[in-house]
Image (cartoon, rainbow, N blue to C red; front, side, top):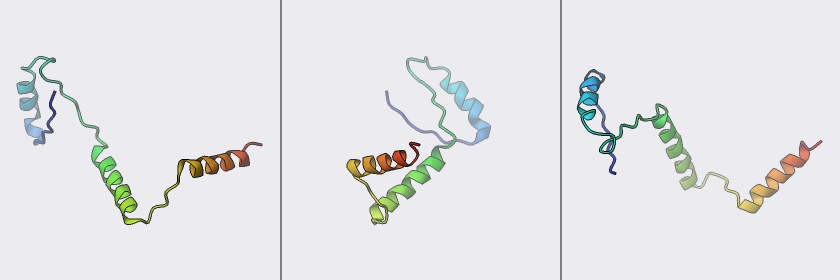
Length: 77
């Protein structure tokens, strides 16, 4: 299947859905977008920009494992 994203004014929503409802579920599936999508997209772009700038601290798997082991041992009591 192919996917497209439609943006439309709220007042024509019913007309658009009526038109799309003429297709069978095997021909067309309507997937509502996550309301947080745009916020999540901004966060991902900001995190990527930090990563590209070189200002973000990165850890190897071994370093992350060591950090977690140390953190768990502090609270192991």
